[in-house]
Length: 271
Image 1 (cartoon, rainbow, N blue to C red):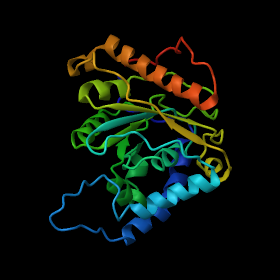
Image 2: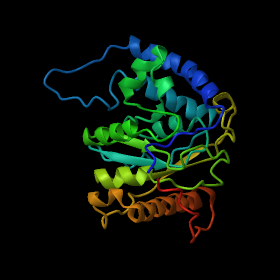
Image 3: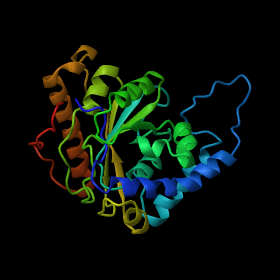
């Protein structure tokens, strides 16, 4: 069972540095915006509020104007409480695209060395990002994700574990990390499919190249026949992963106008 899903390609370090610079502007803006809290009203730390709203609107404007992201509806996440959002991973702007269609804060998994950079650390903590070692088998990250779900937050997962830079035309093998989180936590799993994005694994081209991107969401994946005790069962993880894959393939067909595949690709290793 892998602890998390992160693109381990050799150019990852360069992307980390570039991503850190790209996060500098919103991070500085975040530090400059005072947190507004109303007395007597409980406030969920991870949700969009006055401190994060300007960044959210900026991300939405960028995705709409530069990547021509149309509106196919909001992510059907619960208004509060835990949820897991699974999506295919097409390029380095997938996080922005999904967040701009979500009315809850998404604390993505990011490389630990970038998470700990002083220039962006406070921003990452503020939005609930989960640091992970680049080898993709960080048990601390898995525990952090489970804790985030226990706290009622949304945890987004790219179950392919790495970028498949074909604009949504292909879906890589599904790994078991998302299935483990779903079975262990019992949180609802919402699928999303991204298409039309720049076909690159690098941050710069993904940001600079214009595209006609799209994000579509599906209904929660039915896992009612599983229970938390099956989270350590390899066969149960494989079966849950196949359901995730089929949900993504169904959304791919809807997004690209294809006929849904009746035979999902092989599920990735359950380690």
